[in-house]
Length: 323
Image: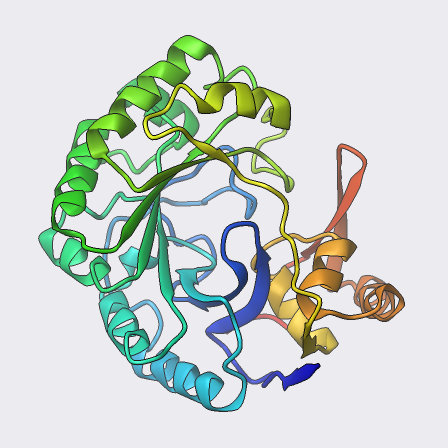
């Protein structure tokens, strides 16, 4: 069994975290918390206080690249390295530099984006360095776009679709489209057909149906049963895949501490079972870490459909707070 000693000094890297599509995925976080062009009602990170369209160097790119090189040399074990994290990665003006560096390593790269910036040629050129680009599309027109994604006022749905199509035409890697299905909001078959029609014109390599599995930004958002998702999958062309739960590889083990668990929970709420899976730890060991983090006020519980998720409290005085 391989034991990986995780460096706890990373500021812009987190995980590897449990991903239902990317296995153990090392995250690269290129923006401050909730720096995004959308304020999606289903977002697991909560609401976006102010949507943004300005592209700039939100975090120092040289520091990010130094951390990636260090991780590759000392840890270097993940199924993917994904540009994701606390906001929209393509808002960082130099995200393409990260992808170009990752090209030099054997672990495949993934860009997880809401596609709002793909209308810009320089963003499309930078995104093309990724092995996989996953875009989100959960609406079918301007009205549903504003209802579900609550985008920056200057964003138009037609321009979003045009940007994705243009990118598809130039991209040699794999393009995935994720559709977040929400009960009673975009799950009516007639509306699903409208989303599917938009996606058919994009011609992605695959379509993924997802739903709420962690506490969303708005309480009125409800998940859809897996059986219902499966019944909708055939509407799409290509037929959609229903995203299954994360299945850990038990042969891998990642040595964790409170700090590494805290780093993960600052980006995404997780259940005890998910933390056990990603770190390969005994549940009693995870419980000790979570218990201490709860007692010291660094994390809180969020209950949903009988499951308990743990999330960072994000207090300014937290010992684990990100700069």
